[in-house]
Length: 174
Image (cartoon, rainbow, N blue to C red; front, side):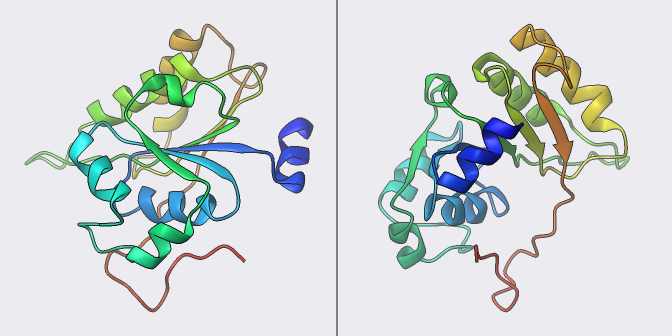
């Protein structure tokens, strides 16, 4: 943990944001203004648009995308292998009975688990029910990484606080 704190302070921390939707993209852009950041998404067409400075969700401007000089985009797990911090911001849609579809969360957790190294921090930004991070996500991370939670890697949940389309209360790094 101390190692990552030191990296944050000296600016050498390496961050991955998994899922570049209305929550993940603004995070990746803001981090990419200060830190080496990989924006990871499985939708190649989305990545191609972002590389051109186009955000179809309209959550970020062309100027912000271009200002994130330390942000790169990838759909390859290999791009995640040197990251210190992973922020998972994938959708969690619900079905007709309001049951969450955790498939995107499982898939993201598998990718992160395959890529993460000892000492990694994984932050879940996806909207999930209480206990989901520890009960559903952590076992996937442990299985894929062959590491142990709270010994070899750390994990937390950060409730989503993004209001799509709100241009008054935008996210910005200070």
